[in-house]
Image (tube, rainbow, N blue to C red; front, side, top):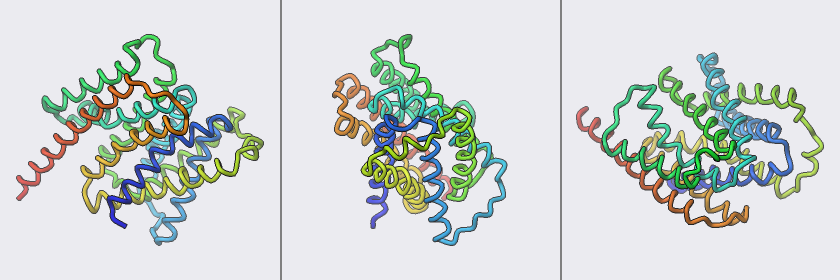
Length: 294
């Protein structure tokens, strides 16, 4: 199967995961659902590593612990808490902010420099977000802030990976999930959400969706993105990542019966242009560096 077809399928899994989580949040406490989501991903990724005879030895477990707390435990806690309070379309829009916010973190924490087009893209992103909430920033739902905080913690973990010069490998992902699951399970138990009864009330169809999209799908996403970076490079791979919120947006309209909002749509268009501008600048910068190395 072509790597591009695999990337499209991975984007489908990633974008669809929000929809599956929204459906299950009506039946399962949010912390229990987050814990199950991480546990399934851990199991399927572990099975893949064992099948491929990839060693579980890792020399940076202390750093993986810190990344697991940020990227898995705290990120999942605030993301699922926020997801429970906002619409699927709003989830999609918040996820679409990620590439621009990653660039902002690179400017602030990695001391990277931007150019005029990139700063314009940031301005367009801020405008698109304000437009999506109809400029009512002081009456914004608390769920938005939870989602935003979860995203910030996830990106902070990615910055740590870069600063510590860790290889973003499947084995690192495995230990992130392992440590994140450990803390989520404890939190879930302490909060009294470790309840088995709701699990027996879930329909077989929803169980299948959960297993395929959130379990097998996550392992497929990790394997595909790692392979894609090696085959076509990080820049082209990042383009497919930007498709994830679009899939979530479309599926929110189709499966969650959410109403089409022209303001949200215009905001998405502006955001798509900003992401295109950002990716274009990254590609020029990379090509320039490659040319200088020749």
